[in-house]
Image 1 (cartoon, rainbow, N blue to C red):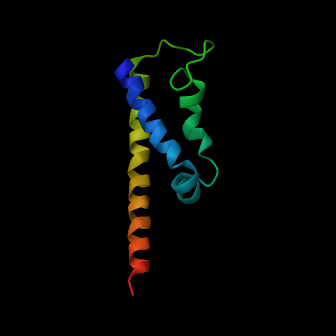
Image 2 (cartoon, rainbow, N blue to C red):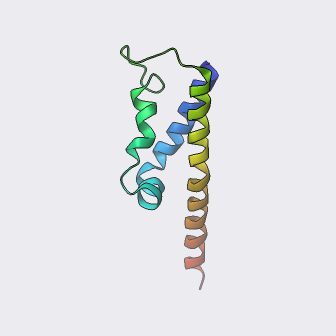
Image 3 (cartoon, rainbow, N blue to C red):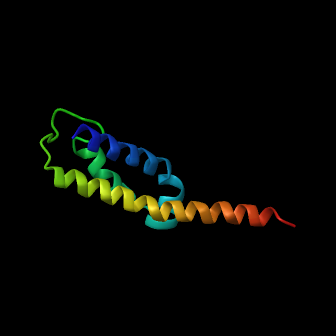
Length: 91
């Protein structure tokens, strides 16, 4: 289970980097907090004593899949932004 938790936290970190940019501006319009609620308020990211620690592996699989699936549209939007920036620089 430590590997699953680590993978979730890696994805959460990547999504956090995209939060103010592509997530809030392009996808969620202010609702991105819901995406991070599970990572921050369950024993995944901050690991506080008052949080549940005995997760069914299916729960961790679901969160990993959810975060990974969220990476796909953010990758696509970032690619479009990069392509647009390159296109706008051409004479």
